[in-house]
Length: 343
View (cartoon, helix red, strand yellow):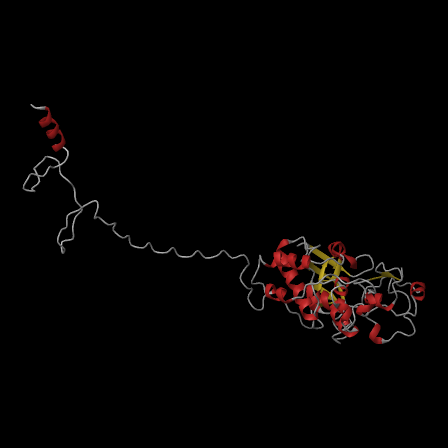
């Protein structure tokens, strides 16, 4: 076979060759053309004339919701919502603070004929016994389920036993003084110091450890009570227009965010009576054996006689009196500030 014919056959095996009449020569190779629409006539495909098929636009991705960096607004009436309304400031100077700037200890602010300390004991103790002849005021003994530790404490009134149960100012007086109470009137500060909303009967040693600390420096050891404790602090500061420090606010928020629906507490007047009245005359004790002071009136029989000075009280066999425990404490001046008079 001539060499030229061999080459021509080799080319024809790969691509059709037009004959002189313009018809394509049949070959075994097939050119694949794109399918045409059934409703439109087919048009010859040519690399030079082909145009790209437009692509349908890809739907835009839905915007991602930004992650919340702050918790949702607290529900109205909750402690968390009230916390957000408190002013945040630094502590003022403690200069000028004394217990007396909040009035006499355990004054009878509600005029029910009983000192505040015994009002709170009757409210918070169970199975308590009151002294006969005191119109249901003076608590002699009872049982306390301590909210700070979760333990049960037996209360017995007496010079060496009363301190086991103490009445705590949930917002300490010194703390209040440094956070706005200096601007309150004397009457308003006295109301603050005797407000049942700000008072709890608690374990004495725990109260001493707390001192005048706020939520940033002290919280009850019993974790299950912390929400109620902080909510009460918020309620008190809100009622009296006191502020919080930034550290205190953050500590309160950490607690309340674990119980965001916790409501603000409230407290009302504590009625007289309740419990069991001691049967028969009270048992004599070393503190009640001395003869009554000549100036003592019948209304004072619920407490020890009142003397002009501690020196006279001690000479008659009375004292000592403890701050937060004995109403007689408020009658005398605690010159060394140790919480005891007539020692």
